[in-house]
Image (tube, rainbow, N blue to C red; front, side):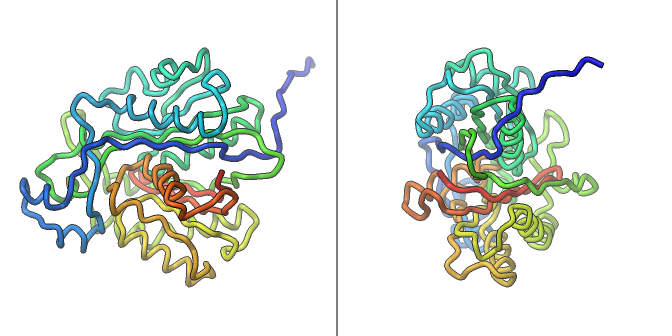
Length: 325
């Protein structure tokens, strides 16, 4: 039998660069109180958000993805022609065809590269990071651009305070490439399709709907074990983790998951991402946005061990341990 050739890749991968983008328009809780029955105190107490960013009507998801992707490529010390594949995690494209990734690749100057979208909702970036790492290790690509981008305001009823106070717009990106040492641990991921109706868009004429209390209970009881599994797969102890960056869904959810991790051995000085306060919930963009903002603020440094966990509609979830660039 004739043997087929293969392209062995490197033993390890790592994040080489980060980038992010948010629209200029800042919407405060007081702003929302002008159009719906809510208040700054009510929003802070329930979800912990103070401000969020809304894109303008003519500001497209693809535009935001390009801005974040370009910054990540530059941060990695690469040029667009070095990128071998583009992956965009999103669940809010205005239409499914054409996909975002091919448009992003073309406009960035990434030529003839595979480009595809991935929809795992708020877990999308972690799914994309795991996929990119596997592509590099398998020899299918050397440098992969992973972008989480969402324009949730296209899909949210602005009069529905159960969703309009939470969701926002933005994009975050990372470049994944080869490494002599493992910088991206194995992904711990899965789904609970039996709970799919807890977060959904019923049809193309509907807005995002979620059963807020049910999602809260699921996230605060089921996500900490996923985080612990990611740490186990990475072959480290929970006490080795310097930074915890969960999906920025709700500040109360973040704090409760962190409390559970500390009860299992996480350090008291564990740095916890709280980008939700001023960015809102940006779904697949929230983790890379938080990482880039924390780095800019000096809250994290290169080489820190970070635990990432995404979770959301599907219901889908994923987590991995990474070393920060």
